[in-house]
Amino acid sequence: AAMLLAVLCAMTRTAGAAAGIARARESGLLPRLALVPKPAWRVVGGWAAGSALVDAVQLAPALAVLIVMAPVTPAAGLALVVDVVAVLMLANALGCAVAAVGAGPGEVLLDTTVILAPLLFLGGLFTGVPRDGWRWVAATVDPFSYLHAAFIGALGGDPAFTAPVVAVAGAATACAAAVLVAIVSPAVLRSR
Image (cartoon, one colour):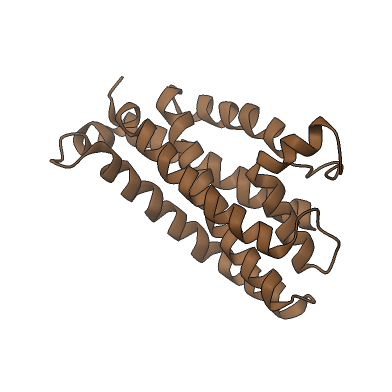
């Protein structure tokens, strides 16, 4: 269940953001937004933040049911909420990055899968996180491994990372997402 919820948060949101931006570029909306007298990072950052907010509202009922029905401790519940919001921000930032280099909605959906599949695998979502070796190192820098650990902890399992570590990783993920949006913003608004 934890793997499915983590993949749902990561994959659908990244693909949705990338496809939405690709469609906006094709319709001519992005070239019009590029004319707004604001820095590119504010325009694209607002788009990504709005998209992440909509995603959070859509996931709120599922998280509420999980928190109410599962044996969630207060620390695990807080870590789960922090990390889900952070990963939604990251997923939208990754969607912006993919859309910046992709051509159309179909291409960005394929690119999203090619990028996320290895990240989800290295995060231990499909095989579990080993406690040593190079995959442990990869999992410690992969934000999706912390999301997976947050869901496992909320469901009463034995996560690879403790709730405080997950919460700190969530804060770091949110910061990384903001930086990524700022970096790719000029390319997102550039017309093809």
